[in-house]
Image (tube, rainbow, N blue to C red):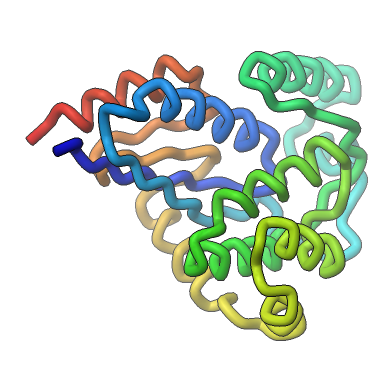
Length: 213
């Protein structure tokens, strides 16, 4: 019988390195696919929890938060595009940053419905690939419907605060576990990898975890 491996992928839709990390992790999973039964869960983390619904200009926000010049920001974004291309994720223009709480609420529901990974991919593509607002109700409703979730239920969730408490609880859990940056991947509650690791790094840890009794 194939060994079971549990993977928690802690991330934020607003994080470009999370898009790279997920694509990289999924490449690793494709390589080891026949050797183990892997369960991949998405877990919430907000980089901009105090961000208002209007969001902020991306360059101004990063300059203020990290103390970088526009030139430094451009260099990092160029590197991000290269790293993304290497694992098959295409970055487009991103000029704005938004609050992602509603996206995490929808992802929590999608996980209960077995559609979290599909919705996560769609959200990452919409924001990092197309520059769309991942917190906008119309975008969230469209993407939820696109991945096979019930649009009426999605609309009801978006018009309420449903699953907010659950998202906050999971965020607190990971903060208490010492997670301060994303992506952060935990395998079998034992192995932790921080940052957008290459597929080989994820593959090594997955094989190690699967080989243990």
